[in-house]
Figure (cartoon, rainbow, N blue to C red):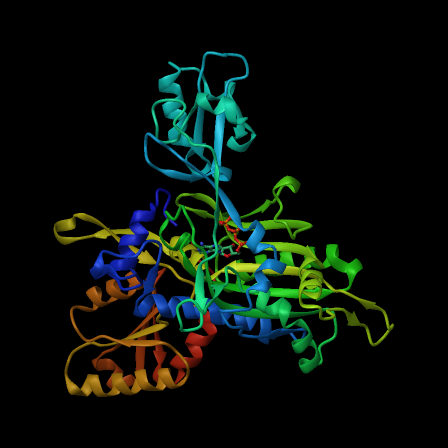
Length: 501
Ligand code: ATP
């Protein structure tokens, strides 16, 4: 990632090269919904496939499932979402902006009674510091206490200046918004039942616990994994695909004996971190842990921690790991009247298993992959002018295209064998691209910008020595490799891949 990377750079590259478009763009767009183009869907599918291999195929004690989006409405009563899935929102009468109350912090001076309080969105602290310095005629920011807005009593909120406001007292009292989308089941108006689009995939796993445990003959401890769409009527939706109204989750619920939750919680934390560094190629310094303080835990959780990534807008969650206790299975037992307990065949103990959950966002992972990979390289342009161009340095595990094949010229004697090489690599499972237009330099740059790790050039010598040149995206190093060893060489390079920088 470059130092001053902005989200705008990512949004513009994503659109320019066909990764992600605004949904319904020709109609003016639909808020916080996004469409993935040809390269975006490859990147997204690669992330999902790597997750599935890592979480399901590589383990004998995790199985998969794919639940429906529409479920019995009582499920959301049992899970606590009908009563508790709310975000408290405050509106600013001056800026007309809306904020999640729990995203706002306030600078409050401990002694100077005449000073207003300055509210700010956590991720934008630096800008606010400038504003506070200006409005208080230079009182250092360090003199202020930082407190969550929710801890400022309502009568005192008259003193608060909103993040984008200039006058105090413009923030409204918090109002609760339920985030679940409602829809109707049944075709006839008036004879319908209200149901919800699922706001998380997890509940399909909980309600199928018995089905899956019995049919897959798994014994606790074991996990059930699922990738699927979730819907939340988010109120504040900036930041591109980071927070959208329709998104995908990759979730795994690991069912365990009641006294083993602490150890499994720690174990899954380690496994999930390893996925980001070793499989997706995210650098350790761009990942962090953010434990949820006990007073901010979700209604179901005993302990929870977020894995955060250093996005251009600050450190933000990409995955939550939760110790959910036996809350969900017990709730479903209560609301459905069905027994959700498990009898251990070895010691004959019967109990309701506890659950460790790992819950990651697909779209946030796509955004993370784009931000992590984005780099700008300088090179000499025409007349020795310094030019910068953007490169996506994806790990080959997730690059939309793994290898591009270029015949040096459009002559049939090069085109035909280049096509054959491409077909052979495709048959070996590589995602390929074939490009015959423009200079080789231009073709390299096109592939660099979309993150293709390897380019092969088939030149006139190739006809003689039966070898091609492999050019590496990040080092620009070039090697000559025998045509019949190209697949094997690429596989080896991917296996031993070291993220540069
Ligand atoms: P946040 O605090 O950012 O709203 P959350 O804590 O509500 O997230 P969870 O309910 O734990 O999120 O969901 C698990 C994962 O699903 C998140 O880590 C995130 O990657 C993804 N996710 C949640 N909401 C959205 C959304 N609106 N858009 C995209 N991804 C989301």
